[in-house]
Image 1 (cartoon, helix red, strand yellow):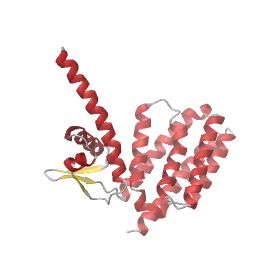
Image 2 (cartoon, one colour):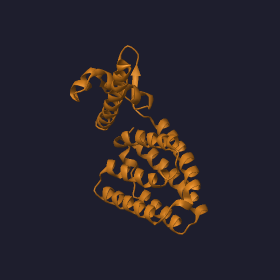
Image 3 (cartoon, one colour):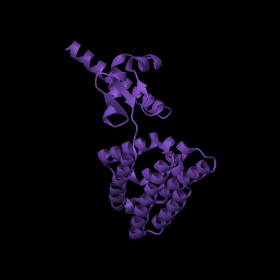
Image 4 (tube, helix red, strand yellow):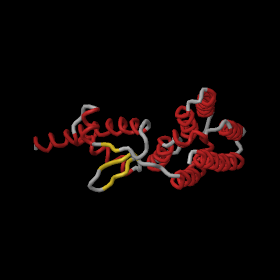
Length: 222
């Protein structure tokens, strides 16, 4: 019985360390060239962890599409191509339109205030050319209403999609535009006026426009 208890505690400890390693490695990927090789043992040494939790973090990142696993070779920072980026936008539209319809009546003044704060951060980031901060503020803006929908699986899927986009954002900086800020303002206006039909129309158009801007930016660097 004591052995089982110790084993359970060890599993919890490993899971906790694995989560920590996961977030550290994901942050590391932001600053790595796509296709770069990552060694589990080397990363474990760098972050002062044992092999097992780091390996679990690698496998999780591989499953989520952040790392590519080449059999008998190892893990590499995944290069997200244009096709994958466009598919992310298609998935985003399906999720966001569905959720906004479901939670529209729940959006109150406190949520509108949060969205306005995100919008201001996005505006400052654009002016100061801080691409990652711009993308993060954009993500937080949308997550205000995404998080209102109490479905951890759908919310988790959405955030994973956005994080994949976030990691490749350095390569598509040309696609960042203040037009996104204007479109967010239009969406906020619809929400404040309680106009669901127009809000869905504006949101759909915003995602489509964002996709085209990213596509244009991606093509410029090719």
